[in-house]
Amino acid sequence: MQNIPKQDFNGLRKPVQDAVSRTVSFDLGRLHIRGPVSPERLSGYQLSEGLCCFRPPKNQHEALVELAGQPDGIVFTSALASKVIAYVSFQKPDFPWWIRRCFPRLLELGCIETDLSLRNMGLSKALLDSVLKNPDFTFFEDFIIIAVHTVYSWDLKNSCLTPWDYRRFMLGMFKKYNFVPWETEDPEIREHPCNILLARVGTNIEPDQIRHFSNCCLGVN
Image (cartoon, rainbow, N blue to C red; front, side, top):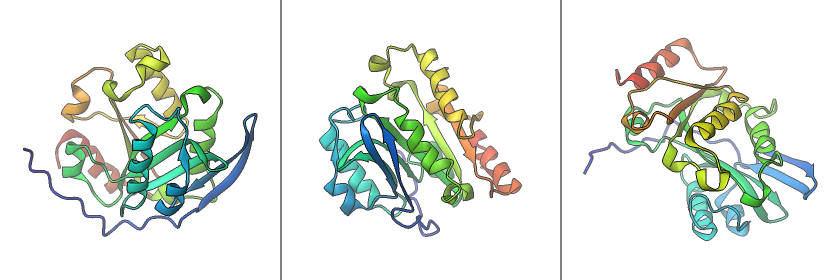
């Protein structure tokens, strides 16, 4: 069993609940995008049946409620009334490579998911625009956000894409939010040529923090 050090969340101050709160009109109706969502509010929501890529909706709902209550858990939702049809979550990294090398200004984009039946409608874009391109919400500009993309976590079956096509799709989507690929010696990334480590460097990150992150990617730190 790997001896992985415990995370220290004392330095992380989460944004206030519902710091993001906006309504966007879609053909589906008025979509309410909000977050960070409290575990109490999230408990009162229902996850749509199409949010099933990672776990059955009931189990994923429980996991998101638990994450929202953690010191490092930050969850944003897109909901029609009380039914969540898309979400994105952030946390301190939980991959072994990054747990060992975590530092105060590092976060991970853990999950982003849209209802299977509602894809290609711009729901993920509306959600990420509200969180990462919102001039009234700049919390993430103080962080380097990583997104660890591996073939085994991609929805290849429902997307009908090859691993290489899915990789191109992910690169294109995340590029819009200033995520770029980083070279890394992380064995989880290197085990398949399609795997990618993406990172978004916030505008308030200092050059020495970027150098430290680069060294972490290469296993120097």
